Length: 423
Figure (cartoon, one colour):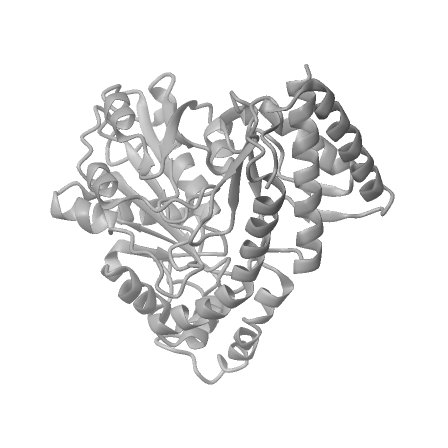
């Protein structure tokens, strides 16, 4: 057990600091090049989907409901839509299956609202300054989209139950607030699953803006690290029950299920929203990569096939998450300088360090050959008010490299904390 650094004498802190700097110097001498910066699947995870490639060879003879080698079919192939509809408990008219990345769909949805407006409302870019709600810490690429389109981003504190809904319900009384980013299951980076009560409050939102949208990025809906998994209340179903379904855009993809560079993305929305989206898409594109979509349908077979496939991912990921938690516990527990999440799913571990030390910790790690996501990246404008939060992505490196990288992280965090405590 580590001694609480905040309770040590100055002399003891100086002694520890010298030891830790020597330890970091030893790592520097090794010339390491380790990447912990993004939540990428490992090679072994990608290998799990190599059977998908064989499905492409079947398409010449198994053309499905139509000849998917040709033009058309804007909203996705029948067979894959059926699988997703079964999994999501929706109708085909509430779903568009598209290309590789759900981020493209989110970007396009934002851009369409800016340029054309939503369901007869004026375009956002003609309504003056618009605002966007951002649960923090959160996903940096979400924030980048909002920033690019000039939306004023407002931090919403994440709680263990989900976003602070009192704050959300108060802020949406402002008609210039047009939406909110949400990663509702195994949130990025904390791994939080929104409680039923939170989902119900989202479903019942009555914003002042008639063109407000919840961007419900359910990226980790099947990415559990436990056999039993966690159940997220269905926002879209709840909103439909209340006659409020137009408020929801739900996104997802197979990018961390099959191939990160060649998955399939989708958007779920009300029939009115879907019809409007398709009316814009029909000018934007002739259609998606239907061959890849049909290959995915052949590969999975049905919704249960997706869950069976994710069991294999869990077997590869859980030992990595366990290794990071074990090292953080061994090296940092009791020191009074760090707290971290123990997620039951998703792709990240969120660490909160002593305020004022996150940037210094990341810089020290980089000097020792380990790249982490930049400090501040989990906040809008890359500005963490406390300079405390760091996102750890355990998925990509082999376990041996992951252990080394986490040990370096702990050493760097201790150095940064002692420097601050010593002034």
